[in-house]
Amino acid sequence: MPLEATMMIIDNSEYMRNGDYQPTRFHAQTDAVTTVFQTKIDSNPENTVGVMTMAGKGPEVLVTHTKDIGQILQGLHVASSKVGGEIDIPTAIAIAQLALKHRENKNLRQRIIVFVGSPLDGQASDEKSMVKLAKKLKKNNVAIDVACFGDGIEETSEDGKTVLRTFVESANSGDNSHLVIIPPSSRLLSEQVATSAILAADRGAGIPDELIPRDGPAAGTSSTNEFEFGVDPSIDPELAMALRMSMQEAQAREAAEAAAAQSSSQPKPADSSTAQPATAEDEEDEELRKALAMSEEKDVEMEDDEFDDDEEDDEEGEEEEEDEEAAIARAIEMSMQDQKEQDAKKK
Image 1 (cartoon, rainbow, N blue to C red):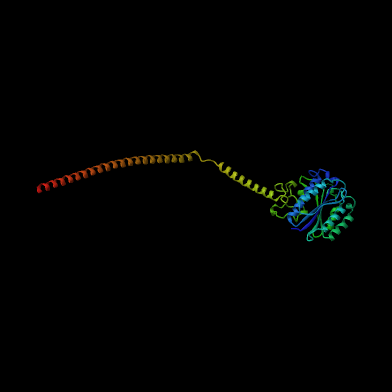
Image 2 (cartoon, one colour):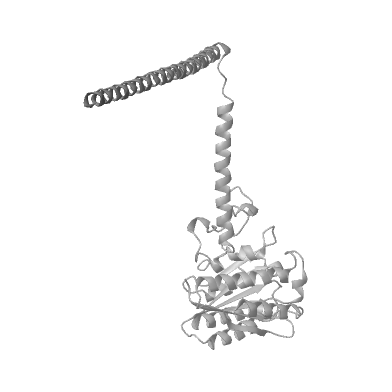
């Protein structure tokens, strides 16, 4: 990604109070400035961005060479209190070039981005003076981008050229300078700047290729449909990815619901075909009930048989006990009789 020090020159003239760009030209320009800053810093953390005005009492540098969005926002807030007067493009560009010359990191290439929303006046309307300034920028290796909106949009001449277009072409070296014309539309100024050639080399950083918007709307579609979900992926890639995933999930649910509805709408089998399975099921249930009843009856019979067997075993046990007692009694009686006979013989 480009390694650059960028100085943004904003228009704070009286024309910025106009409301043809929502909510006003100045606030729309403010959003575009923050978008450019964030895109530049995201593309390369070594990049620096500065902001200056070119109207009011005169061109004024508000922020130089910063990576802090807070300083940019503070500078824009200061500029909002200095809206008025007329723009002085040549002087502002000369001051911006001087500020870039004193950048801390000399490895950073130099770039100036000019937002023009007012009609050209003075030297800015003189083509020869602007071409001379452009050649000086080209000699010092300073790239320049010009974003024209509102009254800054010039009418083309017979050869299709304007002062600003001639100026950019004269400063261009290796396609490093661009002119972007942004007429009023339903799209935000910041969105159109983000998808323009100004940030073409920066906006792809960290964004999947399928989410990078292509320049210009597709044929047969309006400009409002250029972004698939109405969200610029170069500004908020995470939201764009979340919307894409949500859409895919919704499509999957719709496909599942359609399949379920199709299966439920198929004709049901006729009554004649359903009667046989129902009868077979009833017969099967009846057989199960019979088998269960038979098993219960067998269990009862088995219990009765076991009870009878137990009684017989008890009777046999009692008879055996009686036989043993009788045998023991006879044995005792016989032993006593033998004893008596022996005593009689001794006498």
